[in-house]
Image (cartoon, rainbow, N blue to C red; front, side):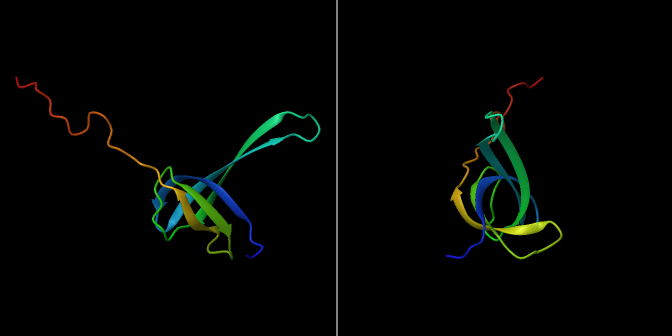
Length: 96
């Protein structure tokens, strides 16, 4: 396997063509104060697999594809099952 960095995160936006925004959450202990620190990073990744919002994906570092894209979606670890909102498609019985 190659030496490229790989990270896992969740897709937060897929509104662009062939691009998704992946949020990477990291939890670590501060080296001096020993407090648990939570940090989030949002990166843009090239997407050829048609990811949806909420999918857990593994991204891999790549050559610069555009000004802000330096990552590629390698695989979809877990698909998000989205259902229709409650109330959508229901007919109202109010006929005045």
